[in-house]
Image (tube, rainbow, N blue to C red):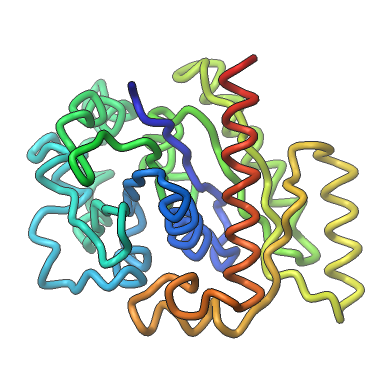
Length: 266
């Protein structure tokens, strides 16, 4: 069976995309899923946050997009059981120039996924792929949306949250109508929520009013442990399982799986 491919996208930086990718993958793995992360951000924070040093990135997402490596060759097992990653390198900064004039430039990642069943984790096929996108709506993000089954949108509880969201929703609709008709929105997860701040509560209500049931019940709090964990090359769930941030990502994973079952049954 093919894995479910979820893209984590938001053209704004600092909204918790990478933190969500790492910790959601860890939480899914904790309940028995086998997860592959594709690090499509040239900054490579997902790779670093999972303890993959720059020396261990001989094959990267760049090689995958250029068709010079297969998923099974590019994937590296992490210290998190049941989680592998295709790491990022700064080469990704030049990928747009390299493929810009190629007719299939938007389908590079989708084509690479045709061989995904060659990759096994603990001798079983991958069940989820999470794609960590760069903070822009560039060709890397387009590739991830074309390859994905659904989009998960991390949204920071800040004043301009809805403004950025409308631009992303337009892009998703364009991709759906032209390049990937099966693309859906898995959900919107509100991040960096500060219950001491009335603005956070107001933004949360505004987004719920606008997006309705697409907004997950789980809200990710602003949490010191979530911020500290990447510097130790670990997801927060391994760094401090009992922290409020870790517990929130466990709840989010439960919601994601529940929605996946509902989508599959529909």
